[in-house]
Image 1 (tube, helix red, strand yellow):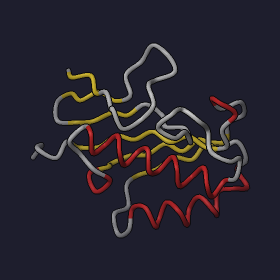
Image 2 (tube, helix red, strand yellow; image 1 turned 90 degrees about the vertical axis):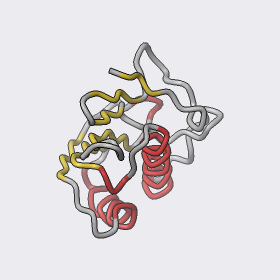
Image 3 (tube, one colour; image 1 turned 120 degrees about the vertical axis):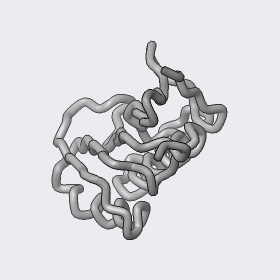
Length: 127
């Protein structure tokens, strides 16, 4: 098992690894809408979703994977009514690739976020 850290994302806000690589798979911790300096972006679902997806992309690339290797995503939304907006931005981020997905309504997300996303992906060198 390899613990993945990223110099391109803020440090974890707790005692966990941003991602773990094991047996050809990458498991990410949930990403929240923060910038490299740890600042949370504006409390707007479009802005936060784009930031979370950018952070997820960065983490996967740093773990030698990518969005095209994602097999499963879990999305946590403070307001399930944001589902439609998130769906559009998710489709933009993943293009023709359509991983399995769960979307869960959840109150009290870290850093007062509107959204957070975690993923499971194959490593790029896994066949």
